Each structure stands twice: as structure tokens, then as C-alpha cells.
Image (cartoon, rainbow, N blue to C red; front, side):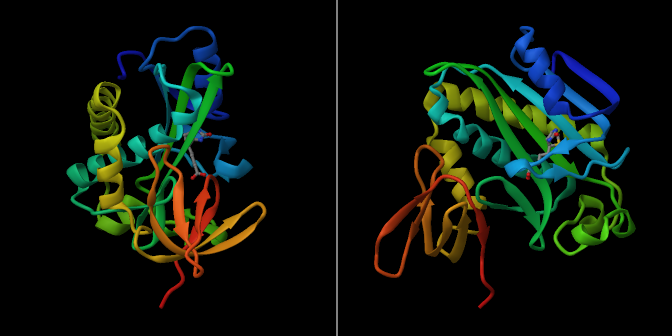
Length: 247
Ligand code: BTN
């Protein structure tokens, strides 16, 4: 990964640029990194706050020969790789909240957004967007984010080298991706479950159609979250916001 890297100062969204490059035939492993995004995108049509020089805002183009239904596995793979890289570079121990949030002290420090260019049964490309709050200080977060978001700097108490972290993330993704393409999802799934805070806990999943409450018992091979409700019924959750009520 990263043999083709596009460094940009200001962009609308690295996702948007990566989509265009992928469409134009960019090779697998092409990476777009920006210092600032003016309309960074999050999951579920949300925006992603991406101020100048403080974060890592990047998108990676992959071209795996897997069916589109397996694409969520790549989000989990990315989350595992980013956790490992943060551990290695900063010594901090983040955990993962399904499906794609990485937290420190229960506050969000990384978001991952996976988007596809696909025909019915075939993936043309997967665009993996990674946003990391690296060197923001408390005052840099707008009011509405300050109770739910944090940065590596705030948690570590000193600035973190963004270039080093980017390099480490790309290496970790490359390693896991190779393993995944050769041997499948198993290792990624085990690692993911070991970093996850939701598994084994009583959680509330808010989906577009309503809330489901119960124990998170694991993820499927497709990366779908399984919740067992009080009646013992098992629900498959494809997309939701997860809350872990405090005891
Ligand atoms: C989330 O909602 O948690 C996902 C956030 C993903 C943000 C990253 S920043 C780099 C890339 N470009 C975007 O516009 N979004 C992703």
C-alpha cells in the first residue's frame, strides 16, 4: 500500500478524490491524504469535522476479489490495523465499538468509512476512509463534539507524529489484508473481537427502524453484529448506533 500517495493541502473529501481516482483506474493501494477537508463525510450521511494540520484524513483504494457482501469485513480489518498502529506508535490502548468507531476513554478518536464501487456480484473497488483526531487540543473541538470526541494528543499528553502513524497504519493494513486475502476473515475476526468493548456486554442498538436491546454475543463472518434479546431471540444488526448503558 501507499506506493501511489496523493498528498493534498485542502480538499472537499479524500473519499471523493479516491472515488474519482478509482473510477479512472488507479491501482490497488493508492492513498489520498489531506491536511484539511472542507466537507469531510462520516457514516450515515453525517459530516466529519476535519480541521487543518491536526488530524489524519485519508482514503485508501483496494481492489479485492471478494463478493460485495464481504466488504464490511474490510471495515473491521481496518479498525484492527488502526488500533494496532496506535498502540505501536503511542502506547495508548484504544478499543473498538461496532462497527467502526475507535475509542479512548469512551470518546471517539477514529472513524472509518467504507464505500464500494461495485456491480451486482463484483467489486470494482473499495474506498476505505480513515479519520483520526491526532493533535487537536481540547479547545479545537467544537462544543457539540467535546464530550464525545478526543484526540491522541489529549489522551497521551503530548503531540503525536502523524507521518509515522500513517506509515504504521499502511503497513498494518497491508499485512492484515494479505493474510485476509490468503486465509480469509478468521484472524481478523478474532483480533477484532479481542479489541471490542461491545462483545459480551448489554447494549442498545438504534437502527433506522427502532431499538434492539440485549447482549452483544459476537459478529458473523460477514461482520454483522449479533444481539441476543431478553427472550433469547438472536438479531442480526447490519447498521446501527450502539450504546452501552452504564451500570
Ligand atoms: C464515521 O462516521 O465514523 C466515519 C468517518 C470517516 C472520516 C474519514 S476522514 C477521511 C475520509 N474522507 C471523508 O470524507 N471521510 C473519511
